[in-house]
Structures are given as structure tokens and as C-alpha cells.
Image (cartoon, rainbow, N blue to C red; front, side):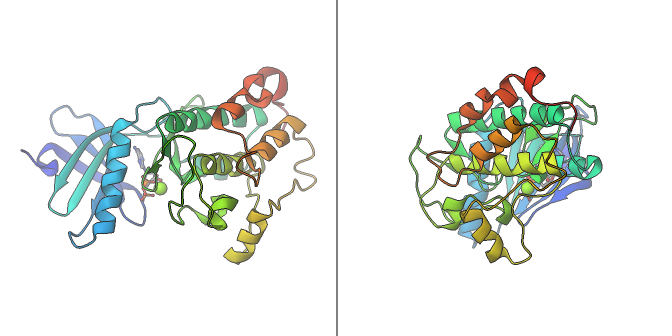
Length: 277
Ligand code: ADP
Ligand code: MG
């Protein structure tokens, strides 16, 4: 058994979260580049160990063009190294900041890839629970870069369409109403988050926002968002209809990933998604 550091050279930091740091690395022999997610978990912290083991187990079974691919894992003392294929286009978050907002045609292409990754996760009975632009990476700096869903740190394994209380987890602005209400929940929480992402892609700002988190939660549970003038005026009614179908407060009425992929704004992009906005 060789160690991670015997096999890989480690370079700059690519990102950081609450439980781990992600760095660029390259294999000493093949020179192939990867992103390694390094998590220190003390033996005493059983919860942290369970979390990282769950992330590892889930990532091992996923293989999809729109998901960051796990390549290898090293377990050494109190450190876990999860080695992923390197993605070099940065976060969708930065891209939104750079471009302010996306044209409908570009947002539709983006959304289709996000929905395909979610549809695949759900077909594998995995709920991501933390879909947001920081966890959506771009495969390269090119204009036709693929979107890659990353960070399965909060993901859970579900049994088909059953709902269950998996705990209060996610990122405040993207939490589905049923999570805030502490109701049992399931796959549809990811579609709510997709609705928030789509809104942000088209506007450059989020649908629910207040400095006071609890006031924002009030907006979310009431589905209290709108399309302010003038910036939303040129946006097609089909785009707004898809957002509304994803931001349905009732999870039973909310679109599934397959429903959303069949929506004309995605499926008939060339005819429907306006190139103007
Ligand atoms: P955390 O659970 O700490 O949020 P993530 O898995 O989201 O960890 O990774 C943190 C950040 O590291 C990401 O937002 C991204 O910027 C960067 N990152 C993660 N995986 C990769 C990868 N495969 N290639 C390039 N950068 C990555
Ligand atoms: Mg993350």
C-alpha cells in the first residue's frame, strides 16, 4: 500500500468548504491532473466519519457526463483523500458574476445539463441536497463547456419516491419549503433548488432574499417571489412557467427532473428560448 503523497504532487487550493479543502494535484508517473478533496476527520467524530464515508460511497456509484467523476480514494489515519477528475472552467457562480445574467438560449443549455445530472442522481436514488451555482462547475473555459455537478457532501440515499426526515441540511437561499417546515422530503428538494438556480441565471440575483434568514424562510414557505420590471419584462412566459413549475411550494405538484426536461423551454429551445434577453 502506497500513500497519497507517494503517488501525487499537490498544488494550489481550488476551493474550500466547511469540512474539507480541495487542491489541484497530479499523478507522479502519469502526470495526469486531478482535484483532491482532503478531509481531516478525527476518530472521535463519528458523525464526520459517517458523512465522508457516505460521500465516498455515493460518488463511487455515480458515472455521468454532467457529474464530477470520482477517480480514486485514499484512507490514511484521520485523513481522507477523494480524488476527482480535474475540472478547469471554475464555478458557474463566477460565470454568473462575470456575465451578470445569461441569455435565455444559454441558460436553457445550462439548465438542460443540470437537469440531466439531477435526473441521473434521482434514477440512482441519490438526492444531492446542495444544488447551487458554487457546486456546479464548468469543464473548461470554452463557450461550449459542459456543466459538472460536484459536492456530494450533503447527499443522501433514498428509496424511490418515499419521503423521510433526513435532517435540516442545505444552503439557506436554496432550501425547499418542506425542509424549512421540517416535513418529510425527498428528491423534489433538488428540483426546487434547480428553480432557484434558473431564476438566478436569468436575473443575476436570487428569488428569495432577506438579511434576516428567518424572514427569507417566510418568503420561501409562502413561495413569495416575483419577476420585477424592467429586467424580467423581455423574458419569455415559457421561462417563467418553468421557474414556476420548479418553485412549486407543494412538492407533489413540483416538476420532476424528467418533467422539466420535457418542458418546451428546454425541449424546443430553438423555437422557444428567446435569444434576445
Ligand atoms: P465543500 O463540501 O467543501 O463545499 P466541494 O466539493 O464543493 O467541497 O469543493 C469545494 C470547491 O472546490 C468547489 O466549489 C470548486 O470550486 C472546487 N472543486 C471541487 N471539485 C473540483 C474539481 N473536480 N475540479 C476543480 N475544482 C473543484
Ligand atoms: Mg461545495
